[in-house]
View 1: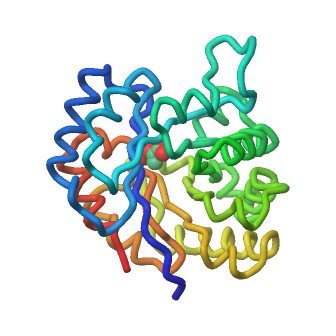
View 2: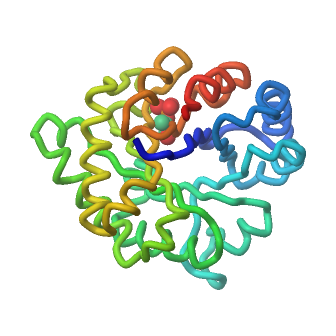
Length: 256
Ligand code: PEP
């Protein structure tokens, strides 16, 4: 099996003020600040990036990430944040194409692609999210959709750039619902994603790319999900808002 290092990311979404975020990050650092079994990323809201940066400063396995970015470098884009601004705020990662961005802000694969390219050009590692709705799954369209999201979102990237890309498979019906994909369901889709990566970029890139699972991950289901051959960690929403529980997920999700 390929030797991919697990990566566990916490997506705090639109939760936590600066002070709350700092307290949560400090409590989390107490739990796993010295843990070296996997890569860890905390993705607070933009307004709490600085507070979390300060809290994780001494923990070299914990990186800072943002939840969104604009593809232009600067200019008249009211309310948007650029790659350079995120780098300046201490970010190493950025989540791109989360299903909530796709659902509420009409993000499509070509926009995801522009953002991924801008992130990579500016030295940020994109966590590119894909996943099907329940309607698509019930209609048997998961494989086709997810392959199209991968092909569209990662179009034109080089093999070298792919070394900095993380993919997150997040079935929309499992996000924030308490309804997790079974390990077998998740593994099946991760296998399709890896196969699509192979078609697009060849076997070496496909074998090296980390693919996280996301959707109602909690401490009790992490080990089994992350124990699947093509699952290389987790993108965690709700359960990342509590330090001890998220630390348990990190410990359970580390492999090899
Ligand atoms: C997410 O939003 O990326 C997510 C997986 O959320 P939750 O863990 O709450 O389902």
